[in-house]
Image 1 (spheres, helix red, strand yellow):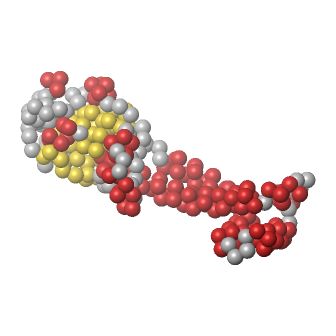
Image 2 (cartoon, rainbow, N blue to C red; image 1 turned 60 degrees about the vertical axis):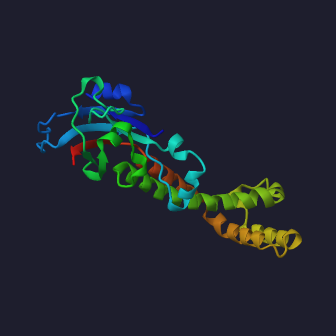
Image 3 (cartoon, helix red, strand yellow; image 1 turned 30 degrees about the vertical axis):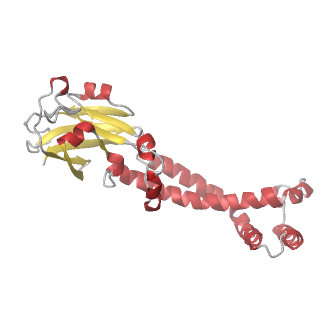
Length: 250
């Protein structure tokens, strides 16, 4: 579960009912103007920090969602708003909250319009992780873009490690008195050429792997620096922030 945000009567009661998040503040104006002077259609205003981001699901991954309960077990970012109606549902008049009436409600997060939901849906709980317009989904998408760049570099790093682990153990044993940076790449190229002719002739996979290794090995130090930079950038981008939730009558 990403988070379970319950908006109840006040911040304290909401925090007790919520999980994986921090409810900083909550206002239920009861048909009065909100603190920023907006109109009386505002029903709930809350500032909440979550402890995680929703999981961004690529289009080519969506078919797999029917095979495993991934959304239920790992990608539920539930927003539940109590006291919106008197229909007897989960959120019906809890703790003496005055019902706000039936109908639909407009949800915005940090000023971004997320969607229109019925009071019954909000009382049951809306999974925000399935809505691509939320600021936290956009934040998670930006993290994923950085991670995709990182995965490409990690793939290149694994290509180097694969050749060295699977094909060059005896070569490095012969050169064990030398540091890696002191090994002449011409020697490496000659070793791999002889190895290919002796054991992997006409195997295009090893031919491509060896050719790729000779190119990437020269850039190994730069690859490591770039990966460290991207990891740090991804961690910084992934830090959840406090967000303002506003619910209004539609």
